[in-house]
Length: 154
Image (cartoon, rainbow, N blue to C red; front, side):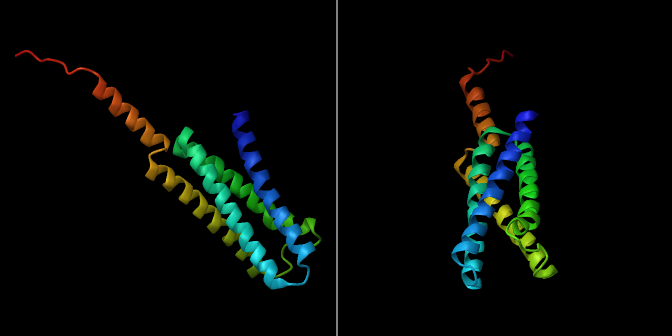
């Protein structure tokens, strides 16, 4: 159980660190250029999606779907709340300073890109036959084919 929470915390920390780096680049390199800051935020969401796709692909190979999906969901919720609430506060901005629309738009963007990344990673594992269930079914069929056929007397 300890290792499970460690995985969730490490993933949430990595996702939040990606956010902090993106905010630092947006604030210090492009202080007043809002178009460039918007592009950097989209790149940030894309990086989050890629990281979650890789994690879903890796964890989907070794664990049952329900276990790794719950772990990723927990990490995404923790990192999403930290990104939306703590991220702006660290750089001196009000998390809801842009209004409720901007606040909830960040939440929906984070949820959409995260869900898309996880879905892409898992579907790639399924298509390649590398997910846990496909590997179980392949091992079962191999075990059934390797046993000799029983002769039935009548």
